[in-house]
Image (cartoon, rainbow, N blue to C red):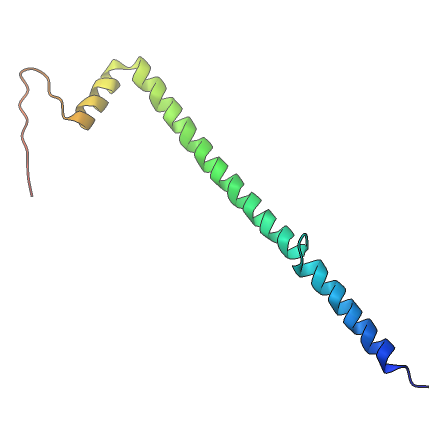
Length: 92
């Protein structure tokens, strides 16, 4: 006996529509994958910022406690010289 083609193709169309909705519509698998990628990217960014923060915290502590380091930083950044020192500029 032959099956009704409307039932057969209708069921296939129904399953295709459900599959399409599960994957591509709001809250579907595609959206889930995009959210997971954003979470992974955000976590990586947070880790990098935390590393930079700890480095800056260590440097700040060193600046606050080590006068020699503070002097070195100020001299490099602002070009200060001590009394009696001579500055030589070498230009390419």
